[in-house]
Image (cartoon, rainbow, N blue to C red; front, top):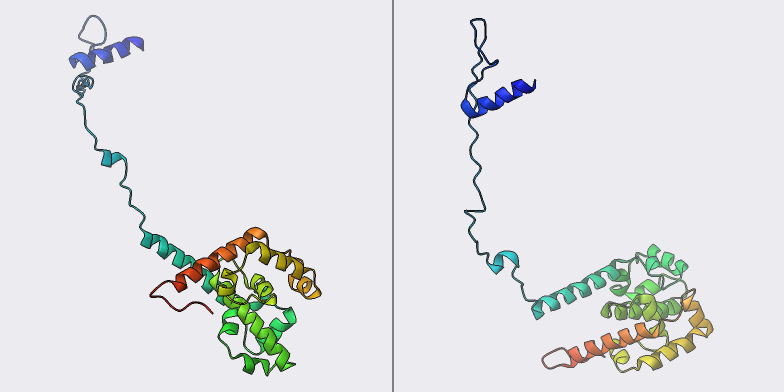
Length: 231
């Protein structure tokens, strides 16, 4: 077998194959036409340096314009507003379940329904209309305040409404530390403990974020060529 492989190697070099050292009339000769093996070029010899542009390696950076940042902020505000308006009242957890069922029976199921509905007409269909209308106005004020502040939910805004902070303008003039102390004192009352339930008082960090957002909104509305200041 080894001798046969050696003959195959000869065929690759010379193009012929002969088995055995001597030839006779009874010998059989095989002629195999095998393709020649091309020479492998030496790439080390003809290697030429190639210049690569920096733009082929590092992609061009697109600067972030202020308009893009403002557009993203507006999108966040819009999504926060749309999400709150579409949420059902029982999911917001800022009014008793019994009240949510009563409002659902008269066609008020979401926060958007409560904001854009006729409150006296709805209250007239509930038990104790005058007291129900006062409660509905507190709920509406809490929803409107939370719509303006991204990090606030209606149940948080309802606490502020209960301590007579009903607008963004009033919060913009507040001290965060004083507002937090007022919330802590309110939580000790029977009404405050009922509104909080199993939740704790909002942290000072969250209160500072609310006040900072309200001040930014108040400055924006008080700037020239804008809408009048918030009431």
